[in-house]
Length: 252
Ligand SMILES: C[S@@+](CC[C@H](N)C(=O)[O-])C[C@H]1O[C@@H](n2cnc3c(N)ncnc32)[C@H](O)[C@@H]1O
Image (cartoon, rainbow, N blue to C red; front, side):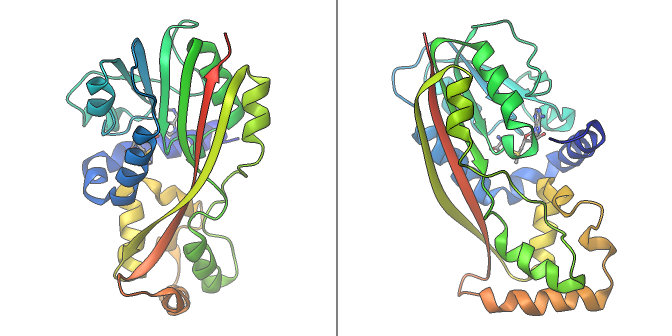
């Protein structure tokens, strides 16, 4: 569970990245599209996009005929949008009970306490309402994690929560029809430096925690870059995103 100080750092990193996010969010778009494709047809009522970022999913949610609430805790992300948004924490939604028909969240839950997010989703969803979430599982960024370890033998890439407990957590919070799918998506970069630059432009450089790559001596970074070369394919250096798609219905 992120501490208040970690949350502030995450929020500030995403706010600062708002202007560059759309330029580099290639794999994030594909994951968001895959989550949108998993939504059931024939929706009505309010759709909440929790951790909406620059608002990529909002037109598709609105096109389903749903009134949308765009929510993000990074004010910079909300300012990058054309529509109004709600600046708030996914773990403490400023919404009344049972007012949402569709809870949607793409790539925000890996930054938060999933149990708190599930409790809040269950609270704001109306009976029969649907939850669709894409989040990251432990094998995400595996190549980068391995390569950065070669720099100085320490961890530089944060870990991601295991996918297995989600089913029990959702069930305990009052969800049924639970479906959990896992799919790996890959992005590619020309070299390690541009890969790290892209992560920073996404706002995800807090992945590197206190021991950010920017503070590494040149020789250490070169060791990491040399190690990463073993993964190179024709498209460049791959970076894998091990995605968990959660789908569940709020029990009536
Ligand atoms: C990787 S971006 C994804 C944005 C968007 N959903 C997309 O698919 O492009 C993650 C977003 O989650 C937001 N976020 C992270 N933790 C949050 C929290 N506790 N409450 C609200 N938003 C949060 C970040 O500010 C950021 O905009």
